[in-house]
Length: 436
Ligand code: HEM
Image: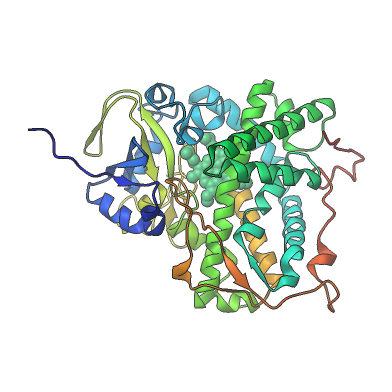
């Protein structure tokens, strides 16, 4: 008699998007690690326990981030490969290769002073708010949260705002289900990146592209391209979702109600709540054991795909006693305890402070200009995009008292900046960033 057929929990369908906590509750019945299906026919083991997650994320002797062996058995057209397939970038390499790529990225972000980053976010947020403020209603995902990080990256990598539409349309196209559109959009994105690199090779500016090109670790052009693509991809999706999920909480939880007119809980509290309870990246950290390993009660075969559920393993899920604190784990937390929203260990998010500053500033600007925003649908009618990796609202429809450019007092139309290139100091120092 064969093994009884076990239905695996699917993390890619509408059921998971509608009720992830229900799925995690069922997965926990397996113990600290459970089998799941992340795409049709592609299975993985998912860690749902905090201590097991930390053990995996810190143990680089047992676990590798390199998927190349695993990938041999995955069809080339699998929709999972853009998220887990190998590339010469920081996410899919180990040891010295990983450290070299990561150094270029962290040093690049270190060179952006926080006050300049904030000024840029304020300018971009205000220009987006000016785009819909007079309408009295907006989809705060499609018209705000999803646009702001890309407009910011367009600038941080050194292009004037006139180029950001190209970046936005190519990224949006890549996320479409239609494979023909996704492939055309991917080409458009590659074109954007390669033109940007050639322009910067010609004349450097004070921007991440130039700093990657000149970094002492000596990245070649292909490596620069891959670190740029990865930084934009890894930064865009979670930052949109951090802003969106935090706004959704603020607009539906009475404790935040008065925040909008100066009250109890702040945008920072909403963001912390999201990091603890609804991480923007819910499951990721693809790892592969270098040998067969008995891990928290389960045998894992060499090269098998294992991922971490930051949401299921996070602080808000019944962890008590030893191991429940942030101490020395690399996981972050404050007030409400540790969480894994930035992951942990050598591959944890390299720029959490920048990401927090971006999300907090964006939400503060929105609340400052539109003091009476409210959702136009009840919270339980909000929908989320399917997919195993993100917790992403499809839209966030809201209404507010319209504002207009002609009204008394300051408005976002006065404050928005003109969208010059570079990071704010370039023009003052007489540098110019040539457009490709
Ligand atoms: C400015 C925005 C951001 C940028 C540029 C960025 C960049 C990156 C990069 C380059 C990595 C790969 C690090 C490595 O493999 O060594 C990474 C990992 C990660 N980031 Fe971020 N990130 C941003 C925002 C966020 C946000 C808002 C979150 C969620 C709150 C987040 C969560 C993560 C997680 C969970 C990982 C680990 C992924 C994995 O190992 O599979 N990031 N990020």
